Length: 212
Image (cartoon, rainbow, N blue to C red):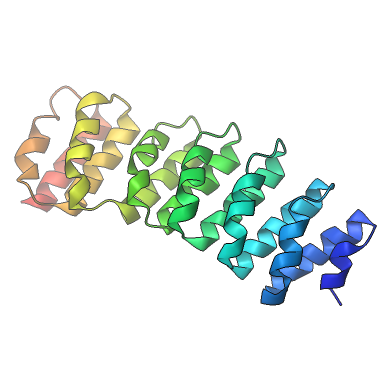
């Protein structure tokens, strides 16, 4: 049986078993897979994390958060993927921290996961991710903000618009404000257009037309 292979003395066998269980997503494998998160082999840890994410049993959240402190990029990425799959508030603090990871793939995965979780408490870190030095992270941040922000965040978005200078980030915020609407935003947005670059001016004009 595959689950028993998780105890094999050969790390390749254990890793292959964890990978197979990630495809099968067998609920009875949760506890054995949690044990493998502390395996001596990092590939086993990584595959066990993916498997637990696919199974979706919340018993795995706390051990996965602990795994997220690994020094191995692939292991941390597996932890972020798995925690994102839960869409649980319990995982949000760790995912928020992961948006600052040194590895761009991990930052992108964390930003994507926060959007899937509809985590409104993560809006400030998603706004910061709009200024990431990696274009894929920035795009995922924009996508996630579109899923998360509501009218209750309008004041936060306007404050960001007033204080930031990054043209891409500001264009995303203007687009979001145009989508949200309300609060006489057309007149507010007109205040930002004169001293900005063409990309932002065009975004502001498009938003104003949508709001009117």
